[in-house]
Image (cartoon, rainbow, N blue to C red; front, side, top):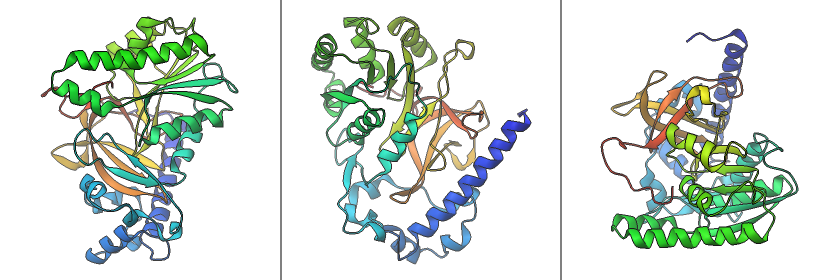
Length: 361
C-alpha cells in the first residue's frame, strides 16, 4: 500500500494513541481500586498479569475471545467498576430475537459516543436548533437515549416512532409475511403523520424503513435535509438506490455501523467513483474493528479481502476484548480523517451461504 507521508504520520500517531489508551484501560479494569469483579476474578485464574504484559494493541491477542454468554448469563453488577459502585446504571440490550438478550450496563459512554459523532455531521444537512424524527427500536435499546442525546447536543428535540424488531424477525421466520408487512406499514404510517404535521429536518431510521417511507412521501419536500441511517446490510447497489432514488441526491446521507457493545462507527463520504461502497471506521481509541480470518482469528485479512468482524471495546465503563461479531466485511485502508483500518460492505456473517433474517434492517 502506497501511503503519502502525511497519512503515514497520522497512522503512526493514531497507533500510539491507541496503545496508550489500551494501557490506561487495562490498568483501570485490572486494578482492585477501580476494576470490576468480572475482570478481577478472571485475572486471578489467569497465569499472567495484563497490567504488566499488555504494552500495545498488538498484545490484545493474549486475551481469549469475549463470549456473549457472559453478557447473557451473569448478573449486571459483575461489570460495575469499583469506582462506579453505588451509582445507578442504564441497562441496554442487544437484538435478542429469541431467548435472553445480551445486556450491557453503562453511564456516560453513549453520550460520549454520540457527542463525538455530532462533530462528524454537517450543519447543512443536520441543522442545529431544529427537530429530529427517529423511526426505530426504542425500549431497552441504547439507541433511543443515544439519538435523543445526539439531537439535544445539536440544540434539537426529537420525535419518536417505536418499533419492535424482535417481533418482525419472529413473524418473518414463521413466514407470516403479511403480518410483517402490516406491522411495517403501521410504523411507516405513524412517521408520515409526524412529517405531515410537524417540522422535521433530520431523520434516523433503518434502510428498509427509509425505503418504505420514501414510497409514501417525498422526504425533501417534507422538510428532511439529512438522514442518519443505522442497520448493517447495505450493498453498493442498494446504497446507490437510496442516494439517487429515495433521497434524490438532495438529502445528506450518513450511514453508520453500530451496536450496543461498540458504540458508533461513522462512514467516509459515499462517492460514485467508489461505486457507492460504504466503509465504516470505529471510534478509536474507544473501540477497534478488525477484519480477521474466521478460521484463524489471530490473523488479519489483507486489504480488499472479506473476513469476520472482530470488535474490541475499551472504555472505563466497559472492556470487551476480541468479540467476534456476527458480521463479515471487507478490510479497507486508513484515510486522512480516520487513520486506521475500516470495514466495508458489512453484512451478516455467512450471508452468501445461508438465508439470514434481518427483519426491518
